[in-house]
Amino acid sequence: MSKKPVIVFEGIEGSGKSYHISNVSKYLDKEKIDYIKIREPGGNLNSEKIRRLILNNKSNFNKYTDLLLYLASRSENISLLKKYFRKKIILIDRFIDSTIAYQHYGLGVDIKLINLINNHLLKGFKIDFTFLNIVNKTNMIKRLKLRKSLNRYDKFNNKFYSKVQNGFLKLSKKNRNKYQIVDSNLDINQNKSLIIRKIEKLI
Ligand code: TMP
Picture 1: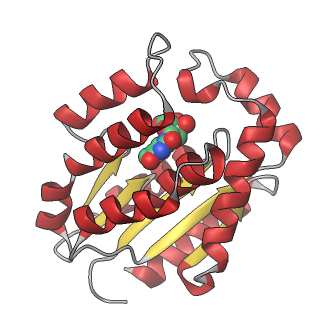
Picture 2: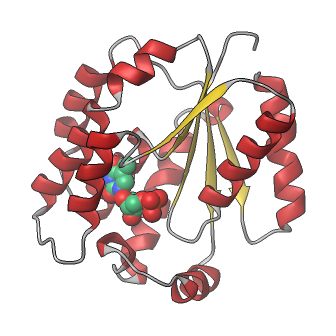
Picture 3: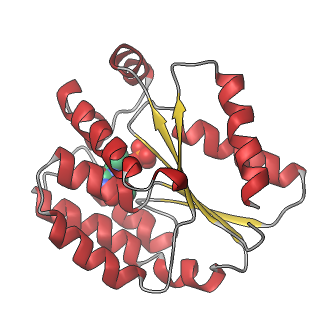
């Protein structure tokens, strides 16, 4: 693929997603390849304000308010994403699959509502490839315990995260050639090179 791709990193808490995206950033920096990187929720000043509101432990929103806040945070990223679409490589730490996995598969929000708003926001913008980081239950519990400051969404039970991870896997199966599953229970260095090799092909 020669055009500048949009590459997303997905996965539940403790799956190694953020570690791998930052390793890809380091690789692109080293190779002096231009890119932009954002995270969701968050990504710019307004979106980061919304992130703080959603994830704050004192917040107590219902699942529809949460959905609308995640989408509001996305809405604030759209102009930046569309501006650089195909002009620069775009790396995104969580995107629409997270909304479907957490809000639909995890919390039971109607998927039609999510798709309707996402499709409206993302008209003209397309994801080229997704790295889906998965983790087994034992490692997930271990890694969650190691996290120092737990936010609102770090505190669901294991059953919830299993539902969310299964949701991510279902989404990946609908479009297998656009996903790479990264099994974080395997050797981390092996996963790092698997991802970098794929990135080299994508760019
Ligand atoms: P993070 O831990 O990767 O920074 O993500 C923050 C939390 O937000 C994580 O628990 C997943 C959740 N989330 C959703 O529930 N829906 C979404 O659409 C997004 C982008 C994130």
